[in-house]
Amino acid sequence: MLKDIQNARVVRDAEQYYKGMYGGRDETWNLRDTYMFETLTRLLEHRGRDYKPIVWSHNSHVGDARATSMGWSKEEINIGHLCKERFGAQALSTGTGTNTGTVAAAQDWDGNMNIMELQARLPGSYEEFMHAAGIDLFVLDLREGRCGKGLREILKEKKLEGFIGLLYIDKSKHVERLAVPAQVTSGVP
Image (cartoon, rainbow, N blue to C red; front, side, top):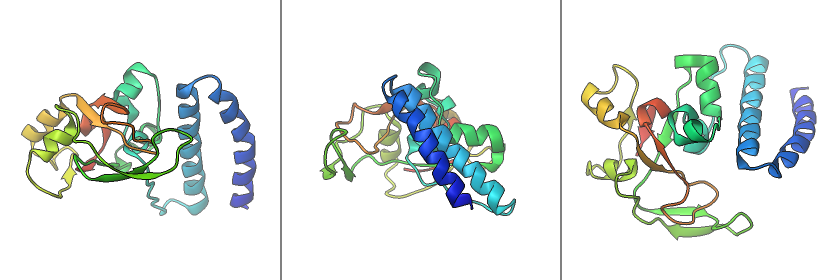
């Protein structure tokens, strides 16, 4: 029955979303992430309190928008923000990033997917900072008491972070200024 109700909501909400596309990116962004959050809460209600879902999405969706220029200047919300408001410390979010490598993305909204080499990330970005550590793979648990105070203070400095999603144009596009410990609870650079 949940499936049928969700399908009916998708049809109803799609009209609002497509109308919003004419109004601008911020409105449709907020609608889309609100729908994701509402779907998550319906699943939680349907499955019961022992259900522990994992939401796999881009950093721009799962990281708390209030800790980024998305939230500061554009008044955008995201599923990470809504989960932190509703579930507090029970909502854990892991951000991922890289300084080099390849990405599967399109170069414009109507484009085909391509495998592309990433350009080295922007100077002063979190990706460059993490790359300078000289460790290939690591996970940072950024929660209070789990990460050294000195490192947390350094990471609280607002830096650029590149958001790579469906589109990858160049390293200067899709970047936000943010404070990582306020955005995510752990990171996989």
